Amino acid sequence: SDPSLVVSDILRISTDGTVTAVTLPEMPAIANAVSAAPDGSVWVGLSNFGDNDSTGQQIFGTSQLAHITADCQGNLTSTLYAIPANTSYLTSLTTASDGSVWYALAGDPSFTPPGQVAAPDQIQHATLAADGTLSIQQFDVPEPGVVAGTSTTYPDGLALDSTGTLWFGDE
Image (cartoon, rainbow, N blue to C red; front, side, top):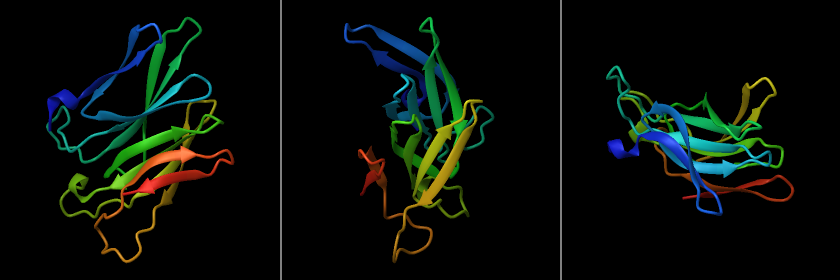
């Protein structure tokens, strides 16, 4: 994979053009989804594409969430959270008015270790508790009539309407 895609920073730019970086723990991934929460924090979706870890072991399609917060002095920190469905690619995310985050995962055979079946396409809903733990609900995206182990759907483009109903596209 392309080493230029390795994430080390998430950037923000203010209306006056000031750029600030938040350094994330190094992982072979790209930040492919970002959404601001009502409390001023930011959720970032990270996916890797079958790179090798520091020991040379191949990592297949692992996705994570990064939660970026600021303290009262404006210092930014990030916390990484592992998410279920380790052979999926996080395609998009959006935050709800309560600060929880919804995200889409595409189960892709190309991110799956040899001999294993690709994870199902899913929508997941994560809620952050006051103690910093992440509670996750998983919802499979149905694929009627599709041969097991293949992925013909690609959930993407999430949006919440005023009633809290989640809408998403399916390529």
